[in-house]
Image (spheres, rainbow, N blue to C red):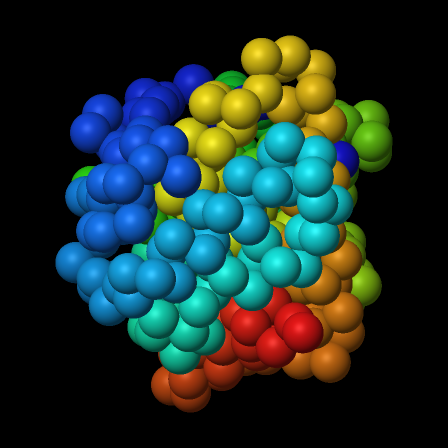
Length: 271
């Protein structure tokens, strides 16, 4: 699921034009050239030597001298200031998760049509694809920073998953009213894992562009890293049970904050 492209909105490059592409072994790279430029202000607590470690780990993974995806993720979280700071900087990711949870929760409780009306989405005479495409803008808003772009990208992926559910049920959009708890959890899981993957790639994708000439090999390596992230997030979702949250409650922000911190910590604690 999640492979159907249903969103036709604007797409911005994840990598800033001036992203540092200096070779890891150059003299400049031993100083501050290894720090990703244009970092989001909320996530500017970089640690110079740790960004060097993160880039080195990804370079080894990309070049095939190491298959250690856990080290890549651990170094990335460390370079970003640790799980707590990554969680704090995940502003759009967390708010989009809450919005997504509210939509799914309302689909389950009051039905799809009532939910769409409450969101002021005109669904009359429109296809399920058109209606769900509008949900992307409902659950995620601005795309001003790399973190915003990660949240928007994950939103597109998860809405595509919802569209797949509709297609699998003969095009009946009311199938979303019948989402059970297991599928609810899966939807949140898909969003969070995709969000984390996009954030990592937004800072370290230059390693792929620099060291892999074969597009198929690049896709293979990216998929392996994405799958690794998905498995780790899935395990944490089983513990956290986000499908049981009340997404309209006053405590939901703290619960989602804890959810993200738990997921980031899973990568941080890799030995």
